[in-house]
Length: 303
Image (cartoon, rainbow, N blue to C red):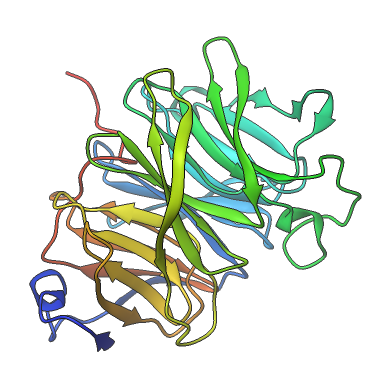
């Protein structure tokens, strides 16, 4: 495995002898990985291939939706249903794949205008959803070419119980990956246009304030700031140019996991939630780490 190390603490998280494992391949643009601890399964999308897949170590790969509407980011809600960002329809939808697979529409418009192309989505512990809405899915490479109705690229808060949609911030160029801090008092959002990460304080009503630049990603290869995850120690793992960029809780650069393909997103998985499942262009990879998930972005079944 190739790495670029800036701080020796990098090796506390990534063993220098660890091998990057190819899980499945043969896709066009993989995205949206989410891990189900109960099933020990991974769900992910192929945006350009227009499908959603389910994988387990035991049963292998299965296509569970043949028309995904060019789905991008996924998350589990607090009931274990899959919430999905759709590029081709500009929708947020929800599916209970264990209960028949019926699709429910949660959001399509803001103030009467169609959303751009929802990209990435996360679920707070209280069940509220936060998602980014750049315009990449309205272009020919990752979506369906069509005129944009909104004149900004926003980040939203969605209460699925009442399906109320609230615009939180609109001064991004291409908002993409999102990740809460461990205590959910801060929200990290990256911008693919500028390859940087901003952080916002989360107020008690769920709104954001005090936005500021948190980190700029090194430009070491192909790719842009994309999906993000956090570990139990507060380290950030951000897909970006060249691979996965690791930064500590204070935005100090630890290093970069250099990937063989352009990398879009990642999810904690396996029994101990210490493996990273990585969606990278044509393939899904797995990497064992010395870290462990914070459980943010991982649905944990209730007893």
